[in-house]
Image (cartoon, rainbow, N blue to C red):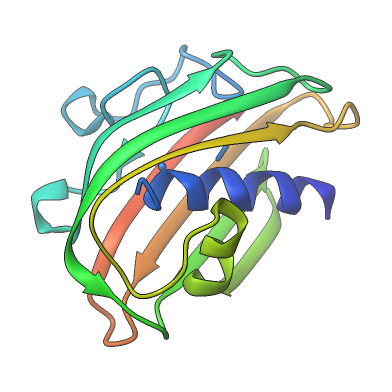
Length: 164
């Protein structure tokens, strides 16, 4: 569960920039044209022009992150539509082929971790420090965060590969 507590704020920070979790190795590339701007391992799931969150950049320091160290996430983006209560994030984390997290979380509750609250709209810049636990098992992690409004309109969708 410590991993969930670590990854969730990272991902929430990212889309609250409003883009959490290289612990993501640079040896795997999804599609370069879908890369999230900035110093990070994130990729959009599809063309981000369809999303209501326009992510300007997400920077992770250090990149790559290390277990037992502090990770700083700085992100900037623009919510082109007002995000209100009822928005949610579907979060999936796999360790190798094993799914270790598969949960749906209330986005507005998660935004409180970065001192934001619903409704959210317009330009946002966030900085979040996260202390990564030393006990993260070495290996390959795959992270997917798919974020929707209450009406099931996609806000953003991000994916990354994580190597510890």
